[in-house]
Length: 78
Image (cartoon, rainbow, N blue to C red; front, side, top):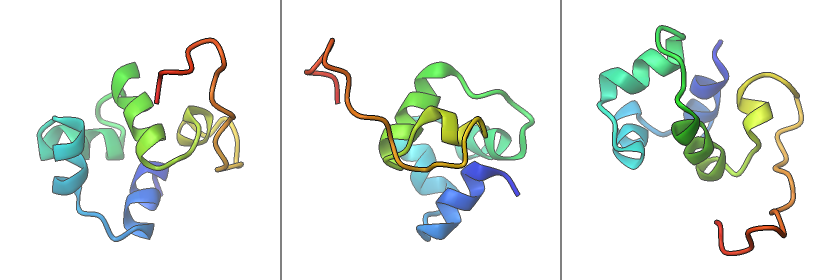
């Protein structure tokens, strides 16, 4: 199963809800989930922040869901 779908379903969130947050259509978001469309970097970052995880976790580069510490270079970035 796709990690995006796992995270969304674990939180009982509908595709329509997350697509509104991302400001994309529900169809576009569903394509991200099934791998029919690649995630743009800005969407990937928004998803990592939304789910409080790392982009590496979303991309299957790690199995550790815990996010990295916030960068001290740009402390205003949330």
